[in-house]
Image (cartoon, rainbow over all chains, first blue to last red; front, top):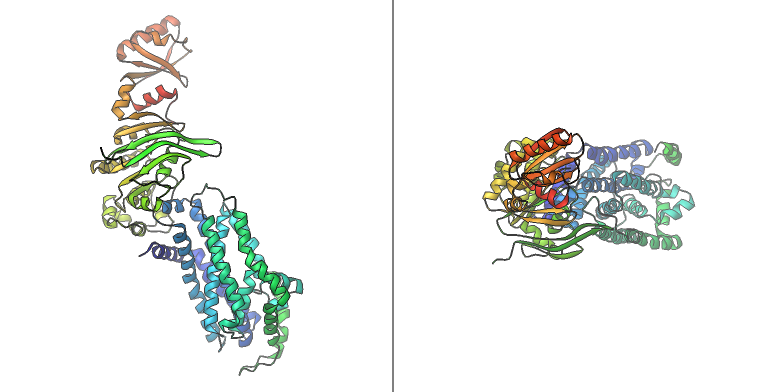
Length: 314
Length: 306
């Protein structure tokens, strides 16, 4: 077995023996799923379908927490040093943790799809190829972001602070928790600078509007470029030793990872495709459905209000 | 004469303004157990980590198994095995999994089952790393250093932090490897360890090799004198102890007077007489056979112990 494969196997074994992993990777995402599908969507299949994208996006983005924490722990405890005296490379180390993370995320996503179908009777799960592509690119890109976070922080405390700072805007401004079309105009203008927005709108497009891959190219390409860039930066900033310093050019590298979405954000604010699509999807919730299960109008009308009421508890 | 398997020439390493290694030179022949002996912070670990390819030197010439660690670190790592200081494994990794995982990284490998048996870890094969005792962890570390049947072994402070009984277990393991003619470079700050395990020793202090040779040679170089350590009630007048009959040399180290002699009984008699005449008193007296500690004291005026 190659080093990459055996390291991936180790990561999966370790994750399955870790109680925290079960909480953050299984219990928490499924909890969010039932919160949105059962309570906010009130079990209405069309609204459940609308929220499936954001719920899966949350699940996928969560990968960056676990990975940054794991890598920093490994470095702080001198575990990485032990691997450093073997022929294992930094790329082996990083790529295996991303693959393991991906393989561990897929089952939860499948369970969410299954529950949507069986419990909430969502007959149309959308374009499955688009869904698969976006889940894959999403997991890999946010995992790479986690590896960059681990490389620019020295201690677990610093890592957690930085994770919080990144996580909050990602989930509240991207449409992952509140529909993007429901956000104030200013927030929407900011949202298009965030990678998470493209993952959320992409997944929502795939699942709710059944958009094929070629209609989601903006999202897919943007995330793919960002993934390559972020992974490359993670390998450049990678440190085996607990006491080795953050490279001096680290800030430049980190800024480089923000560049693709900065440019895209500027362009989107002028020619806004993403936002129009998201707004159209949101408005369509109020229109009478063509599907065989028409939504009850009162539950539709209540939707934004119930979302707003629930916000402080987030 | 064949090339030494490990060669270090005028090695230099700086951390900011601090020079951790200041021109270290030595070489190790195949089948030899070579020790770097010195106090903490002498630059031993830095030297070893440069040889392992973990750190880059700021100057000097280094070859390990014919490779320059800075240039061919990947190839080199297939040829070496190491137990490091301040390292660890994931808590929830099992002993056998660790051996299998690491064996899998190499082109050449030994059967993990054999290593498990040899290092007395059979009963712990399915134990989590976090559940092992300090001694078991260290035995696993040594077993893991052997998974690729390496040409050179690096043991960095293999017994640091272990209690005496466990330390002797580790000695037995290293002595067995020595009988098998394994090439080992080890660091230690324990005199006993260097004397017992090493064919040759380099004494390192402040980033420099201050003496190099077999333990016997080094001890002879210090004159082969017995050391008498005395504590006195009042300080002795400068130089008077050195002129006593039977005493070759005397110096003060941390408030203790260290006398070197080839005839201990005579030295003690003349010391006691001298103290009586001076109105001084003996607080304690210890006799030690010659050891590498003497070499260190002679060269630096300090003790090796912390």
